[in-house]
Length: 111
Image 1 (cartoon, rainbow, N blue to C red):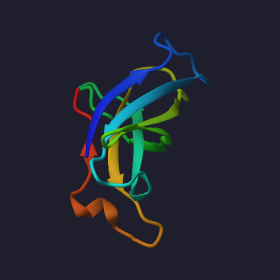
Image 2: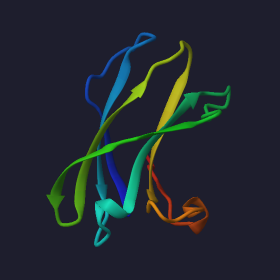
Image 3: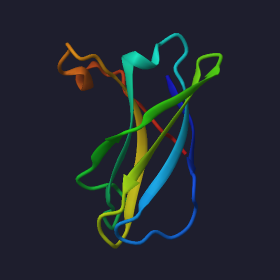
Image 4: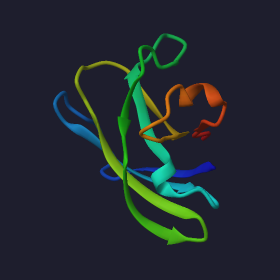
């Protein structure tokens, strides 16, 4: 699994109350979209430009692009002013499983 690209659908400055619209392309290989969650994790940035108190927001599977690639879309809420950051992750997901974050199977976006 790999995050291939992350696009700001409407680039520019955001105001409090607006959202940041994302379009994300991921490569899942043989993994089904139903078996993963693609999420944007966002929050305020520290002085070291690290996300503090990150909150995840689910991205929706929009369509398959073929050869194991998929497009996901969603919006990150802009709830406060100041320096904000985000990243994208792919993680296992199953309604009957617990503790899936401890499997070591999380793929993070690398710019």
